[in-house]
Image (cartoon, rainbow over all chains, first blue to last red):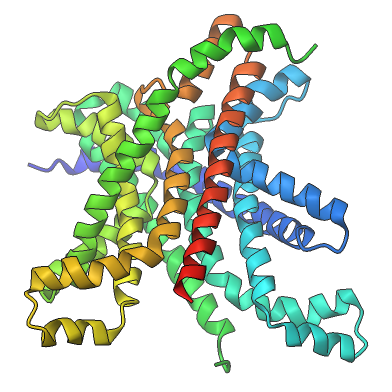
Length: 219
Length: 219
């Protein structure tokens, strides 16, 4: 028999946890988006120093696992006298990690724009900034959208990990609930997965819509 | 002094002692993902609408919900149905299932990239369905996707620290234990980060080389 109260009780505990999950996803995505462009364009810079530095930072954050970065910010930073709120730690780790992945998306999209476009910009006497801003990025952006969509879902999935640094998001709430109500473990975690899917699916649809909008009138 | 070399060397053997857990988890999960991914790819291609539809939904669901939560689901829920396995086995299974959904898409792309003429030729030569797949389609489908699979192996490797959530003592977990004993987190966590960086960056260079080499052979 299905006890409706059990399910209501679970949802009542889990749904407030969805708020920090969504907040982390949106803010993390915004931070990652900005960092993606900084990293991606940095790696394509004319100046070797900028290229090298951006390359190193990107490879560093891509190569050391998200959870290791999260723990590092959480456990090690305080020793250096930097005390961040746990929510900030989670946001920073997610933003840096997915920003590094995103910068590869930006880089390869910019490189995929045909060389003739660059040359046309030069022929029209545009500055390097104008070429990037009006010619290259608008074309490259379209190529980036599907990959950014995938990364957004990855970021959402990554937010579950921040429960380990005591941020009371959805997974954290579920784990707390389970310790006091082990008999309903199956229900708790099934609901948890369903809510994650309920957040992820509209996001996927949204990104597909954005993708369609940007490809309107193009081949 | 923030960094203590003597302490770092002292704990290095303890960290490396559990390196095999991280490696086992990575390779084990990847084998599971490769096999299950192929099964999912075939199920998705099935002419049976129901099987194909259900597979589509299952793949979408698993790949858009956090692997971290899926691990807890397996870890806590399986014993309720009388299935008990060790934490590491659960981890291998959980990560394997999660990544099988990604690999199934990779296989699908590989299979779709095989030229139509190859299928027709196999039919014309009166090959059985089994012969067609084993001797004609799969060898050609798998070759171009090897670099992509290599990248997923690296991604999977970087996801293994999350196994500490289900009590697997892998490298990050060991670092946390060492840290909590001596209350010095800087060295152990940083060293784990470097371990991940070296292996994943090295592996990514290897994948790039394979990719280049295969391109040359092709044309």
